[in-house]
Structures are given as structure tokens and as C-alpha cells.
Amino acid sequence: MTQFTIHRSALLPALDRVGRIVERRNTIPILANMRMTVEGDQLRMTATDLDMEITATAELQSAGEGDVTLPAALLGDFIKKLPESAIIEFTAGETGRIRVAAGRTRAHLPFLPPQDFPELAGGEFVTRMEIAPQALARILSTVQFAISSEETRYYLNGIYLHRAASDGEAALRAVATDGHRLARSEMPAPTDSGEMPAIIIPRKTVAEMLKLTKGIDDAERLVLEVSAAKVRLSMPDGTVLTSKLIDGTYPDYQRVIPASNPKRYTLKVAALASAVDRVSTISAERGRAVKFRFGGEEVQLECMHPDMGEASDSVVVDGTEGEGETEIGFNGRYCHDALGAVVGENVTFALADPGSPAVITGANSADLFVLMPMRV
Image 1 (cartoon, helix red, strand yellow):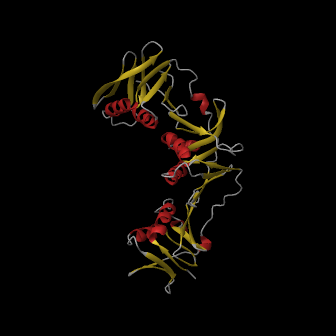
Image 2 (tube, helix red, strand yellow):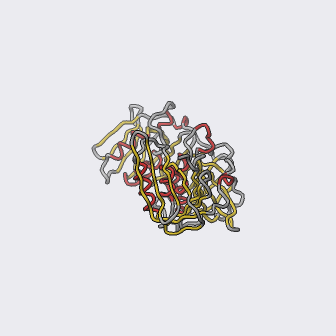
Image 3 (cartoon, helix red, strand yellow):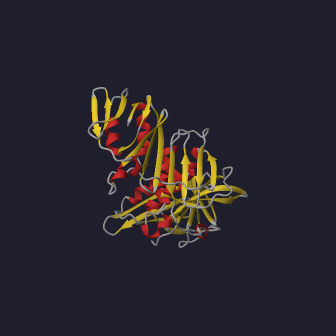
């Protein structure tokens, strides 16, 4: 028997969090549904795509009983259109459907048996640590842009999260690369992270983690649990995200980070990002190179296209180390993405020669970006 009552303001936020991972088109009907289970005075909602599972709770207006699966998208759209003050009653109807009523509004929704709903078993997590939400969000969002979308190298389709030594201290480090660019960010390693295995968090899971941590103050703590096959993130409000990890070996990214690039140029981030964006407009091709000419008091930028013409710009250099001029090409979009992740007013390009990767750093020493050069 299903019968419970809940206020729209309590139901909708949890419904939104859970419904995000449900695909609109599913070949398996049960995956289009979310499971709704009454547990005392709480309603627990669960959704899964078989790779990721999210559970959220909401306080009931009046306790009842129930365990049912309902179409996630349909229910979400219906609840959003109800008045903000609506009190919603769920009851099992005589037609074999679930009756959803609020005031004079009625809907009878189809359901599937809850016993058919798949569960993503977490298994045994070898590491459990408390972590500041914005610290975790910062390192993930900093490197997210460099995640590869090339399915053949599936092990690059996520963020590599692991413990590493940084200036003699233990750090939790996030790395992403697509083979053409690399982003690295880190934070002090949380207590109890000593036994944490190195993991690769899938792109979709990273995006969901960032949505869940948005707006949560660092005064609160998340719980991050890790095993060799899964990761689980538990939020202060009771929301729990469990996800499979990418089963693969991440490459030795340290090998592509130059140990010493003697020529260093410091520029204003905003000015350089705007100039790169402007000159890149001349090319309709995503992979078109922008030529950088470092040397003197300005960096000259140039982009050429055989059919669309050419564009040039320049940016004042605030500081230099090393001697000589260097002419090097970078993918304009990749460069712009890296500059968008730089913290602070200034950015430093460390170069060796036109055929070697460039190292880009900003005010935060925990962040580092590498760009492979292009022939120009």
C-alpha cells in the first residue's frame, strides 16, 4: 500500500538532485524511473543509470507507507508546475496507477515494481575521509576542462585522483589530460586518506559532484569513500552519490611535465585570454593554431586561415626571465581553456623551444597546466 503526504518545497529539491542522472531515453524501462521509499518520517528517492546512483531524502508532511518506482522526468515536470505552497498526496489508485494529488490537481502515473529496481552495491570502501566541499570542488573544476572525450583511450575519460607528495607534504592531487594538454591541481591531503588507492573518476560523475558541492560552505564536511572499483560522496543534507570508477591504468603524467623551461613570461590573464579569443575568431577550425611570438616588451599573436584571412594582436609583457625570442604555436581553444582555469591576475608561460611543451602557472602554486605546441 502506498500512501504518504509531502510539501512541494521539501520534495522538489531532492527530486531535482536525483532526477539529474536519469536519461530521458532509456532502453531499459526501469531506469527511467526513480524509487521512492517511505522510511519513518522521511522519503528516500533513488535513481541510477547502472554506472552511478544518487539517493536523496526529504521530510514527509505526514508519515505513511510506500515503496514504488515512478517515471522521474514525468513526475519532476508535474511537481514543478504545482503551486509553491502545494501539499502533495501520493496514494495507490484503483486503476493500478499512483494517484498524485495537490488541491484540485490530480494525476495518475504508471509505476513499475520496486523489486525490479537495480541497486548499485557499494561494496567495501577501503578509505573513508572527511573533506571540505569547496576544496574538493576547486581541484575538480580546475582540471575538468582537460578531460579527454576520445573513447578509444577510455582511461583518459575522467579525472585521476590520488595522493602525492608536494613540497614534502601529502597532497590530494587531481589530474586530467587528453594528450594535447594537461591540468593538475591539488589540496592538502585529508586526514585518514593514507590508504586511499589512486582512482579515475568518470566525466559524468565529476560533473555531478560539482553540482552537489555548489554553494556548500567549507565549514561543513563531506564524506568521501573510495575503493578500487567505486567512489561514494555523502553530503551534509543526506544526499549520497555512488559511482563506478574507470577501470584502467592512468599514464605516467609526470613524464610530460617539463622539469625546467628557462624562458618565463608573465602577462595579465584577462588581456591574454581576450586576445587569444579575438584572433581565434578568424579560423572556423577548432584545431587551428595561434602563433605566439615571445620576446621584447610584448607577445605577438597571429592566426592565419587560407580562406578566411588573418588576424593579429599583442599583449604587454609584465616580466621576463631568460633571453632570446621564441615563436611557438598553440591550439587557440586549448590555450583559452587553460587561461580560464588560472587563478589570479597574472599568468606565467615557461618555455624552452618551439617543439617543447609550455608550462602555464598562475597565483596558486597548486595549479599547473601544460600545453603541447603545434606546428605553425
